[in-house]
Image 1 (tube, rainbow, N blue to C red):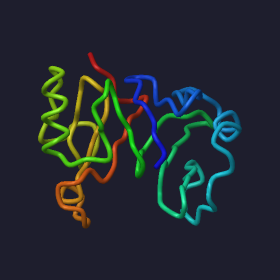
Image 2 (cartoon, rainbow, N blue to C red):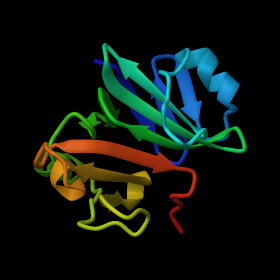
Image 3 (cartoon, rainbow, N blue to C red):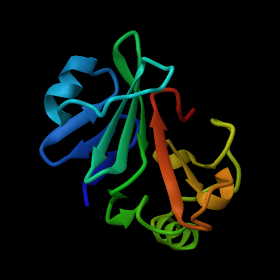
Length: 147
């Protein structure tokens, strides 16, 4: 399972590599390799898989990284697992760190905001897909700002 660390407001760290907002698309591809062929109508996204399973979806604006969607693997922050878990365990772990997960989102059309970490998390139930209370994805964006 691929593991990443969340760096709130900046992006993610994968091993020795920082995948931070503002990086050019070709720089990210040098670190992560070639993305899987994408049949999407959007040419501003790169998708990465591990052993045939979805891992990351990266979005670019003017060829600059602006959104990171973690679809698989493990994503953690300060020892708390954010992706490979369920919503109750996530909320409890973050609550122990003094961090709240809202029940709604103001940043996206679905999911739940975690303002302190500048992320939105969604369960299968939140997005109408299988998985129940397991976290389906975690998104961080250059646009998720704390005021």
